[in-house]
Image 1 (tube, rainbow, N blue to C red):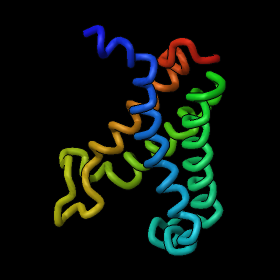
Image 2 (image 1 turned 120 degrees about the vertical axis):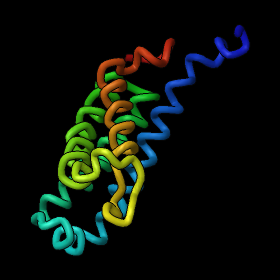
Image 3 (image 1 turned 90 degrees about the horizontal axis):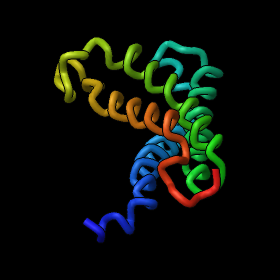
Image 4 (image 1 turned 45 degrees about the vertical axis):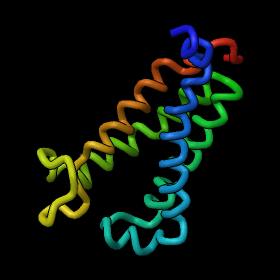
Length: 136
């Protein structure tokens, strides 16, 4: 167990990299497709742009928060929580009892979105207390 304890101050990076990479990818992927996504989701283009920016900035803050300040981690997570709530209730809720995608629900269930929501709630509450010895 002592072997793993030496690395525990770095374990926060598993969550940061998972959340940061997913949201950074999805946010950047939305930018060239704003008009198409707006039409598909029946939402105004500026709202899709704002969604993409929340994903990009939130991801960057969570990643930078690992090196820098506690508030970056918490604000980044706080920005991503409404994104996940929107994804769950607007896109995935009809498949609430379906964890994976099916023919009737091609966008899939919401296990991934709920997992991302829970990780962001964890980061919001814990902040940088995860990375012992780092600045907060």
